[in-house]
Length: 258
Image (cartoon, rainbow, N blue to C red; front, side):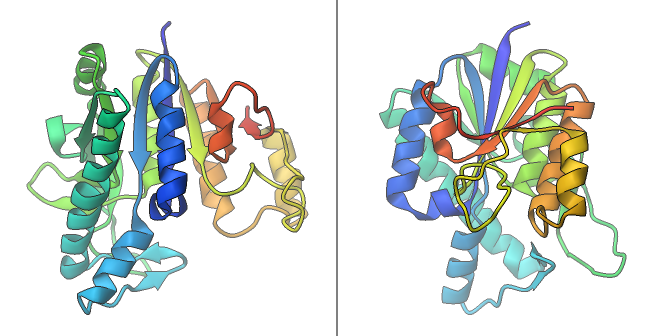
């Protein structure tokens, strides 16, 4: 089975021009078939405030009302996505920028209202893996932003980590897929105050121990649950660390296995 790498970058890399350029250099020389997924929440918050639109968050997740959805569509699908695509073209990577609505690649349904109404937020339902594969086979590198659609003309704001894992699961029927979640830390840490205390291998047993000891808390929990979910559904490997994990020389990051 041919290999496919799916790399996700967060807002901290997107916000910092130097970090973004350094990452895209690494991404462009990464061997084999690959897909990039990006968020852009910090940029969206910044532009929304310039437009006088207040960003509302609950438990670290954005409430997406109609006005906010317009900003997110402009920022994720336009400003951030097209800048990334243009920079990749300058590095000889033939990138194509996409939302989940393009080639019907990612369909979602609007999140049902329980305690909180998140508004126009989508939970991914299905991936058009054959359509995405046609782009890959034509030597294009897909660059997805964190927007999906419901099949009835409605765009939906969707968590970029979830998009990454569901694309990886969908593509694992065709490829041996690996996920790389790039963020600002070197990996999952044993001690948050010691930035070098990387847990190099995390499996379901050690994960449970770190949860019990309250070493893994808050925003890392949904991220890691996502990782195990992907592994349970056909993804071969998941890595978490900073962008240096894309280099052959670096082995100081977290690899998650079952």
